[in-house]
Amino acid sequence: MSDFTHFEYTFQNPNLLQNALTHSSYANENRDKNTRSNERLEFLGDSVLGLICAKYLFREYRGLPEGELTKLRAAIVCESSLYEFAKEINLGSRLLLGKGERAGGGAKRPSVLADATEAVLAAIYLDGGLEPAEGFILPFIREKAEAIVKNRGIMDYKTTLQEIVQKNHEETLSYRLKSETGPDHDKRFVMEVLINSNVLAEGEGHSEKMAEQAAAKAALELMGE
Image (cartoon, rainbow, N blue to C red):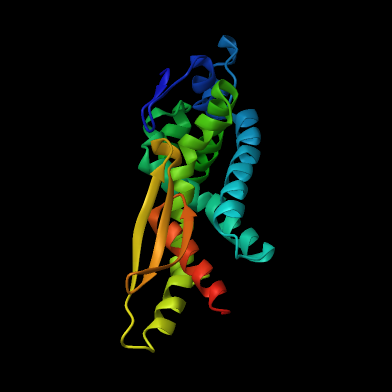
């Protein structure tokens, strides 16, 4: 139980992971063993998650006002989203649940899984610091943010730029990867946006799609849009 293979992290203190996976129902049934529930870790994990998410959104969605950033963060860190993530990593199968809670389907209950996700995040943060905590949750935050932005049509600079360029049928818009740096869990991409063969602007992001959006935004600003 000392590892978390979702992103290849090994705990220096395996007791932290066990604590994170311990539901209050299990702790109550094992009081004689001085077993602690994950509720305190959940409390900390909620704040760690908020910080990581806010940091990412602030850095990647620079054109989004505070109100929209707040809405986007709320949609990412809500119970239903964390439940989706917990199912992706099969967290329910690893939880320590009381007999009644397990028999009642606790391993599949959204609130139980969402709380456990926050507890595991806190355990990783306490064990290894902010960097491995980000490695655990950032891929999910990134994917969720991009999906929400796409579905809501928030700041789609690429589409706006495409519509402007298409007015001149002699011009062709394209994007080109300029550079890719950083470890797998924290990649940085720089994309160039070109009109015909001329580089108009460039942008940076944690995915090629986000870097393209940043490049399109920079191009629109150069065009006075």
